[in-house]
Length: 305
Image (cartoon, rainbow, N blue to C red; front, side):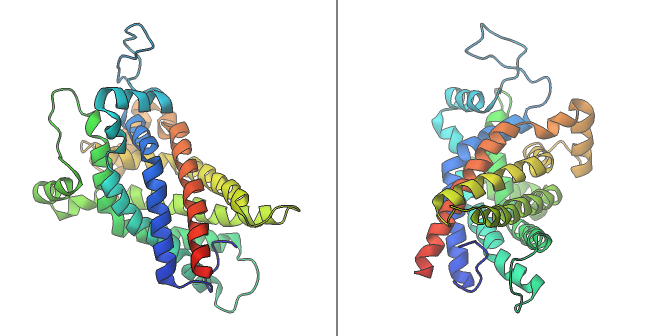
């Protein structure tokens, strides 16, 4: 059964399934997300020492997915890889639950309740763009706090940590920066999440439909795994540039606005800077999509009976 199955379970049940699946996937993959954020925040010219090099000065501090994970664990402890997990779970409950649960009702609205047959791809994309934008507008404060906490280890040596935890981060930002600061980076975040949501949900639907037309393939865990990987690949390739800008704006307050961040990144580091952390991002998003869609399909199966 595809995730496009609006008549089988209620919206409330779909929201619960979606929120649970998104939270479970977040918990399993947040170390990769932390590594991705550190790589994206690392500017050209940042240097560090790697244990595998004999004092290899002049090399970037963070080098690749496993190297970044190793460096964070060594310098800050294994727990640091789960920094931001609390707001990350807050985010997935709101954003993950809403964007996925709303996808089928919005898609049905776009094609009409009387529509019969496979939904056209452009309707899938439009529905996912709309639900992604709406969901992240509500969940932006949780995303901001998650990135701020993940970026703490990126601060120069000797500078004290800004926040003691997720709730302290919310209150500190509110107190010192104002309510509007919780929606910092909303523009690139809407762009990033609307695009990635469209890439994930629409591609998952399309890839799954295509796979099920191949003789021998059935609607089972293996098909869900392949469709999840396809969704993750599309999401990372399409969404990486806005993801980098979003992470930098949320993690580094020195940028004036989205356009300023985009231009400084482009002119100072080149176009490829927008694909910094591509492999760890795909490792994370690919794994996240596989875990989330597998969990979602199973959870929905429970309600379907």
